[in-house]
Image: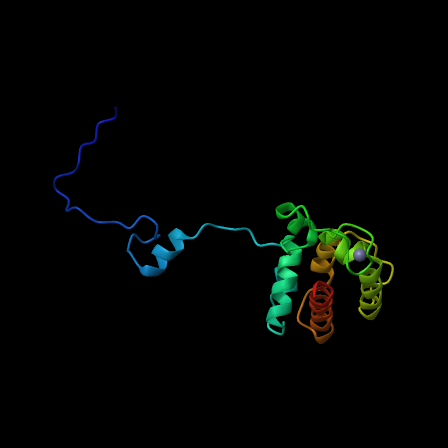
Length: 158
Ligand SMILES: [Zn+2]
């Protein structure tokens, strides 16, 4: 075991190790309690100053795959029939509800036409990645596209 010989000529000092200057502050204590999370590429699609909070929240849940779609409900209650109420054909998953359902596909086609994004045929996750790359900034046209997206997800979900 290594030995430690304290220097008896120096005074003892108290150091707060989480801060860079060794001085305690409430801010450095709060910062030390935070666990770092990487930024997701889509956060500016969901959270921007002009967003409508309830629509942004539903969009956030949809992107995270956390909406209570019928397949999720069926996991807890197997007696629930998980067919889509919009097309009455397939099990309702996020992928079906937002891109594969013919009803929502018609909505997306109209929406993407309004946004000048003709011919985009992607999965839900690929679409969100595409949007994150192409809808950057805070110009009125980009904000309008983001609002269209949030509104479409919100009303399809409703
Ligand atoms: Zn459907």
